[in-house]
Length: 342
Image 1 (cartoon, rainbow, N blue to C red):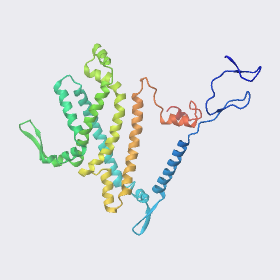
Image 2 (tube, rainbow, N blue to C red; image 1 turned 60 degrees about the horizontal axis):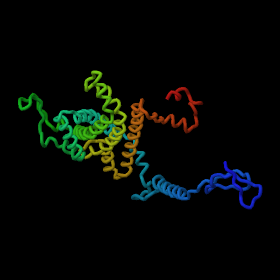
Image 3 (cartoon, helix red, strand yellow; image 1 turned 135 degrees about the vertical axis):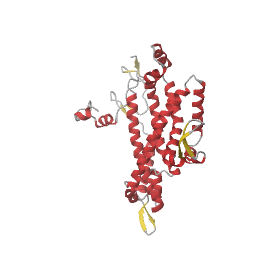
Image 4 (cartoon, rainbow, N blue to C red; image 1 turned 180 degrees about the horizontal axis):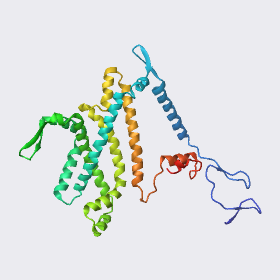
């Protein structure tokens, strides 16, 4: 390091070093450098504002009282929420909502996969048919589709089984076959299939084309290549948007209340039409939707983690692993053997 002689000093030399940055103090010869952290008053001001807003929100939600009629009640009616949260009417409607969500998603995923394969086909008729289906069902609102299937008896009063343009072996009343629940399933499932077709198609296209060519060179037929080579690799790209679609379907199932399906939203609407307390009952529905969404989100996390095996990215930590890290357990020290294996 070069030696620099200071002006006005005889026999005293100082080593030339890097310039002193702002926020660093040096006092006295040979003293240690003391770094002062840079202050951020704007951050503290934002924290204070957020704390005040949070306190106001907590007070309004949990403690504020209002006068309704001749009684003083909590603003959000938490006593009413607790009264109806676990009633059989609400629980039964919750299972109808979950049933709609699961069955409609199964229809959407299966049909969407077929449509995606058709869209990628070299056959122009198959590809055009798939494109037309996707164009139609993505271009019309879900509510319109539900109302259409609910009123399908206007177009087809009877449904028959038989030969095309020939003899019918059995005839049924359309209103008996296409019930409100079936209409909701068909409307939600077909609409979901259009979106899932594009998601699956994007996942298939994300896989390097050389994978399929190498498999075909080994003598594998196209369907086997798709099932054994392409789709397992494409699942890493298909699962995240599919998880979003499941959560979206859970919320879209509330549209079935318009066609008189007694799902969660319709159930609480029937209750508050009698009690004249809409907000507490809507809170009941919202809490159940949040609970179901949380379960689906957790399931999506583990499915994504399963299909991420073998990729170049490290597997994300599980919630239990994050908890170990927060608690300071290194290599699981101090944890029961049951927790070490998770």
